[in-house]
Image (cartoon, rainbow, N blue to C red; front, side, top):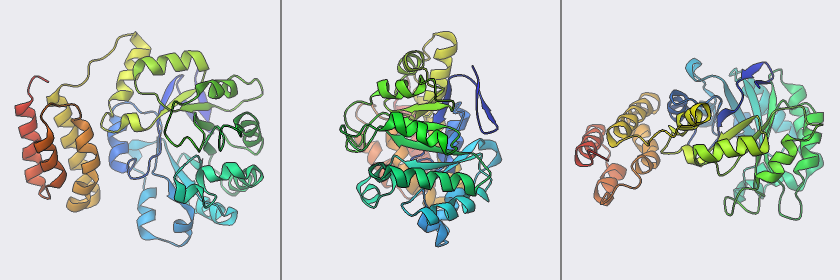
Amino acid sequence: MSFTIGNINFEDKSLFLAPMEDVTDRTFRYICKQYGADMLYTEFVPSEALVRNVKKTFTKLIIEQDERPVGIQIYGHNIDVMVEAAKISEQFKPELIDINFGCPVKKIANRGAGSGMLKDIPKLIEMTKQVVEAVACPVTVKTRLGWDEETLVIDELALQLQEVGIKALTIHGRTRCQLYTGCADWTLIGKVANNEHIKIPIIGNGDVTSPEIAKSYFEKYSVDAIMIGRAAIGKPWIFKQIKHYLNTGELLPEPVISERVAISKEHFAKSMEIKGEYGGIIEMRRHFALYFKGLPDFKELRLKLLTSKDPNEIFQILADIENIYNGF
């Protein structure tokens, strides 16, 4: 069955790209959109930087027409500042505004932002309520199961968030204290998704790294969509692979080396187009290594890719990779 978030229509079993700092910029969103991601998100945006008019932060809010639908994700610990940041974000015409109550990074959580909000549920709910009331576009939330194993609050929290007007909820199946260790607990995500009192879409997140896992989790936990994060870095074609498997039951092979080189070249060119030569080179260093992860005897070429400051040299290295590993 299809579902809606606000006035955005999605097909059953949709796939969302998770917001990731220093990853889900316009370039990476562009690439993932080519491979079938149904919903994209910006990197998470600090509310205080928006309100202080920090120029670099505003670049995160730019959305291209061909990547829609896109949500702008904001975070912060001050309610008034978050409300103002939501109003600023709305001016960039996202399809929705997402509130980050899930980031476990110490410097964010210890200030009471991100997953730090899970230690003050009344404030979390009041912040959400005020943001919902401040903007016309749909507001959604991304959060975790709780602060730790002793405070698994997601059941009641989902109902409270729905009550104050959010239009969808993404649940990462870990506590804050787990960070990204251990296994995501999808049983609690499924419990929320199957709660008869929950009327908003539930998006599951955590450890979906293959088409088989995605299919299993859709069937077992009845979520409306699955959000994919780290598994898409260096492998943006995972969205295409999952959709093909869901539709046909057939597993697509991994792209051969010539295809991976072509994808990385397109990614690199788009990155330089948006961020300039230097910015594009720096940005791509985190992606290049993962595009070619697993190639044997790759250390020397990997080092060249990650240290070169010359675009022409980088394109030549990519051509060399294709020639040397032809057949992989």
